[in-house]
Amino acid sequence: MIVNDILDRARHRGLRIATAESCTGGLVAVALTDIPGSSDVVECGFVTYSNEAKISMLGVSPATLEAQGAVSEAVAREMAEGALAHSLAHLAVSITGIAGPGGSAHKPEGRVCFGLAMQGHATSTETRDFGAQGRAEVRRLARDHALHLLHDALTR
Image (cartoon, rainbow, N blue to C red):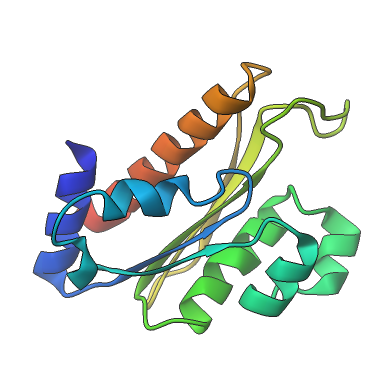
């Protein structure tokens, strides 16, 4: 199971993990902490659903939110970097997106932006368009993709 491998690899490297989640509402943190013994690897999880929470808890810039919108790689980057800055974690993944229902032509339902920040490495971001598959499915797909990002970071 990928979560067990993430925890084992982080444990072996002495790394702690933080999550910064918006549209997934903490599903990545739940997946990680469902495993007994995860407390030696999982530092914390930030659920920053509102823009105000992104600003106050993670230090996301109001100017970035105004210029790019909450569903953007720029905000995902600042969320991931903020999770590192506001915790003792060495590795952080962030998620911000539109799980649905709703969206717009510019930012459709199912669009999710991810950030991955790791001490000593450049922060990476990416956007996935999962499509209008329904709220629960978009959230599940986003959770799984974030777990794969963590796994990939720990295997390089």
